[in-house]
Length: 140
Image 1 (cartoon, one colour):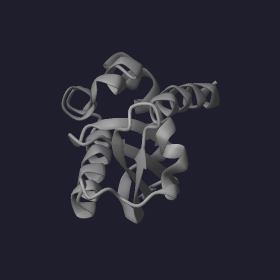
Image 2 (image 1 turned 180 degrees about the vertical axis):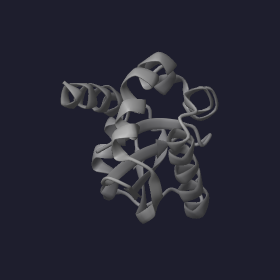
Image 3 (image 1 turned 135 degrees about the vertical axis):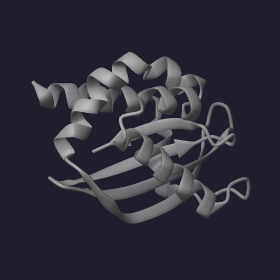
């Protein structure tokens, strides 16, 4: 049952983060600063670790993410996943690339971060638009 819930949240968030699928194909645009993007991704993960869904959705999500992964869905689906991981221990490997939406020509920064937790590791893929708002979120 929990596996289906995890798959559901991943699937929904992946729809909005589909551009992250080809993350390794492009160099990061000059519109983004790599260290700023990494720090923003770490902040998103830390907010999620704290269980502060209101801040995450209200302040960090862009309009597309808000419509695809609202507060109720995040509380119901993502918080149990985070509880399963156990206590956060730290960040491990990080990589930043760029991507462009083929339909809108909008550029994104895509961050892949591996994080260590008490019970197991998790890999986050987070896409940021030019306003540094989350436009895609995926965890496995």
